[in-house]
Image (cartoon, rainbow, N blue to C red; front, side, top):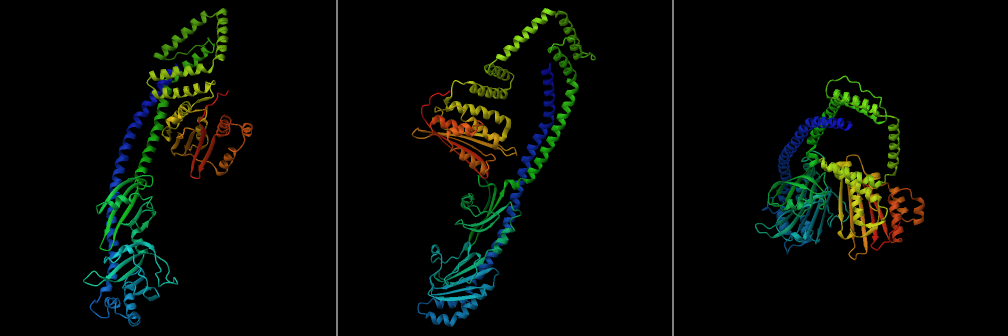
Length: 610
């Protein structure tokens, strides 16, 4: 009767919850997907427009610097122009010291005009010929040298094309031997000076430009600290970085972006280093070939969607609470008379046959109560002293039999219950009961102390199946098992205590998903079995870890005296006893969390031990 009332109660609750939650859940899933898609598309569009605007600003800034470098060719036909001086100075017949003595002030004036034409220029180096004459100018600094080594990237050789070197720390060049010019973060525009209209290089101009203004333009292209922006050249050198890390190993999308033949585009990227949207655009001129890239993490894109999902979840929780309260009220009114009847039945079951159920209803429950009263009256008429004595004797015999029931009865009973659950269409209940039964059978079998590793693994799997049911999707278990290890003989109850240790001490209930890994491997020569159990739990305090590691170096006798549990120390003690100090155990825990236990066991024939 009680089971009948409970079944009705559960069905009512399930119906109310289903009617309330299912529509809201479906609506939440659909709206969440729609919002995520719209947010992504809108963010891509807005950031593409922002990158296009930033691209124009960067190109305008770089073109201004490039135009300043072209001042070398101003008034090219005048004898006192910088170009004319360079052309005369590189002539093989020129007397270099006399030429420098006569023209260094004019060269200084021309270089000063270039230096002052643009804010942010750090220093300028001019080399006439292959280092025949070298001039270096910075703020309050001007030096010149004769027959200095040519300071020009070897990979560009005598190419007449200008180019830009990515951001780096400014060089001191050979003339700044005292390091009078302060080091700055700069990018360098290098322009070969050619004899027009040919491509013959007659001089080299290097302009170090502070990266501050370029960085300021880049920062204007990010709207949050969650967004990351990079400018990289085709050699994978970083020109600018905002909120990011200049590490090619972490930015694995660079190969795909640089290999793309499109001027701009969008990449959806997901790996261990980054998960989100990558938007890029190309900055290409005759003197540079850069790519501006913006990273938008999904976690940042979906903040609004996450907030809406949280609201929906809260609404579901409120409706669930209301549904539970409503179902309890309805079921209480419906099952109250049934529970009252069950209470009278329990009194009869305890031996009180003077029970009379009050009948104040005319429905089916009232009919049932009247029939129950009639039945009790009939029983009272049949009971006599001899029958009472017989019942007492049977009761005593039953209690004696119950006291003699061994655990095998519980195992068989669980099997029967599991079969009923399977017939009733509850395979999950059957699976869980089977797991419990497997563990009981394994524990009850005291005749074996050495078992194949496959039996130990099955026992641990049964235990973990129960834990996965307990924690639902918050627990994931990975198995990496070498088939050759399944037949290796190992001491019984080796894995389960180590796995249980995670749930006692390491599992976090803060909402983070738990991950447990079981690994086994037999060496190629078949002489050693390695077992490793890893988790992502809370880890272990360094002092406790140090204390536990010291425990591994104690003698077997000391371990026996201090044995208080079936955890790590118990497993280690039994390994030392079975394998005569040949087995190995190591433990590890990182400061960020997680705990690892590794066993290394010799593969050998073991004798059974009681």
